[in-house]
Length: 181
Image (cartoon, rainbow, N blue to C red):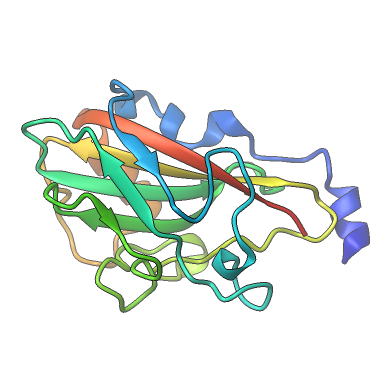
């Protein structure tokens, strides 16, 4: 499969296709998002990569700066470098505004915060597993503070979540990890 990665090397969804750049999601970058598992801009550990490459354990995340009036926090994890026209969503999760983070593994399907449906109709966290030889991929963890909760159950799809968030973002923050095979 390395030949496929080389063939698609110059094809990427791109930063501009992330939820971060949807006009209705613009807000001050007031949330601070971090992880004890990786530093912003650095490699995501193999244990956080998707199966069979890694253990598919979602990284621990911590945040601060949640503004007053926040009714819900939403996390969207996207791969900006997938060789498609738009990014692949690796996780969608909704949180109480009183939380200040999640432990490793808490974004998996069936876990406390394994919420919405991501790429390919799968629920919960699905770690990095880029095409071998395609180069480094950027996995952008985007956290949004909303002035109202998103209605719906745990079967919401990423596009539905983004549409429901439009015009209701009070603040946002992000951290990017990379992964390459």
